[in-house]
Image 1: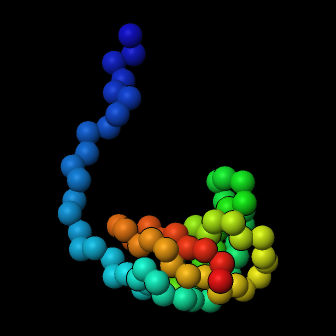
Image 2: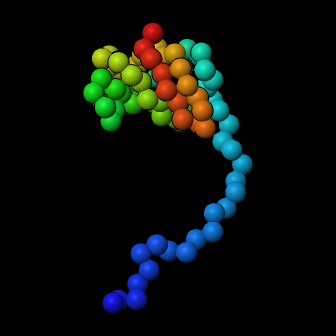
Image 3: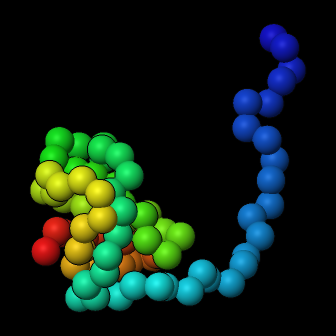
Length: 79
């Protein structure tokens, strides 16, 4: 009854894909920043990107093996 749109009209704009700084199998050093969304998960940062790390109980700078790099979303595990 308020004549207000809940979803604004917008037009998606295509842009170039960001370069991938990591690839599957790479071993990198990353800083653990905070706990992740699930139990035993952490979020790490390296080269301006966030990496979701499973089963990592360490703190500080850790070595991570990238296990997935699809669509610039990175997953890894502690080495």
